[in-house]
Length: 327
Image (cartoon, rainbow, N blue to C red):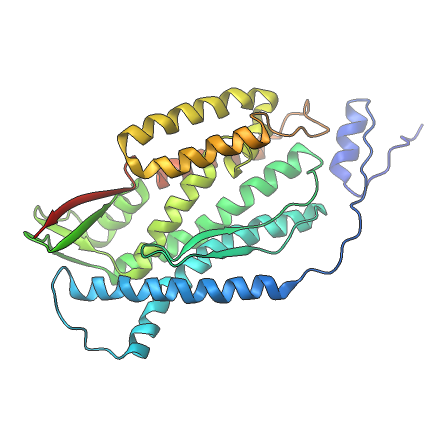
C-alpha cells in the first residue's frame, strides 16, 4: 500500500517511510520579490570601504616599516586597494553564495547575501550573511546548507592565499618603529603557505604581507569564527546534524573554551560576547528538525570531519596582538 506522504523533497519521503512516520512539509508563504537593490547597494558600499582599507594595506606593504612618501596618485593607490577588496569579497561572497545555493537546492527560502560595510582600518567589513526565512526541514538539508558556505569559501581562500603569498616578500623585522605594531597570528594553513613560498624565514626577518595575502588571512579568521560549534553558527548546524540534541553540550563547551581563549588573547573577547548573547537570545538548544532521529550517511560524516580539518587549519590561538609601541 502506498504511503499517503507527499513532498517535493525525496529524501524526506524516504526517511519518513523507512521510519514508519509521516511528516508534512508546509510550503512557505509567498513573499514579495527580493529587493535586489539593497544587496547591490551594500555590496557597492563594502567595495568602497574595503578598497579604502586595501589602500592602507598596500601603503604599509610598499613602505615595509619605513616612513617614506608613496610615489602614487590617489587613483593609482585606489587601483592597488582593489587587490584587497576584490580578494576579500571573493572569499566572503563564495561563502555566502555557498549557503544561498544550497538553500535554493532544497527549496528553503533565503535572501541574497547582505555585505556589511564598516570603515574600520583593519578589515573594512564585518563580513556578510544571508537570511534564512523558514525552518530547514531535514538534517541532511541543514548539514548541506551549513557546510556549503565554509567549503565554498575555503575553495576560494586557498588559491587566494597562495597568490598573495607569492606577491609578498621577506624583509628584515623593524628594530624600532614609531607607532603601533600589530602581529597577526599564523594559522597552520598560513604557516604551510609561507614555508612553501619562502622556505624557513631567517631569524630577524618577517613576511611583509601583500594585501591579497591579508585578505586570505582575514578569510581564515572568518572561517574559524563560523565553524565554532555553538548555537546556530555554521559549526553549530553541522554538529547538530551529526549528534542531534547532544549538540547542546558541545555549545556549552565551546562557550567555555571561548572564555578561556579571551584570557589568552583579548582579540577573542568580542566574539565571545556575541556568542554568549546569541545563546541567551535564541536559547542554547539548536532548533529541531523533523527527522532528528535519522543518522547522517557516511559521506556527510566524512564532510563533517573535513569541517574539523578546516577549523584546525584556519585557527590561530592569538589572532591579533599589539607587539610594541616605540617612539
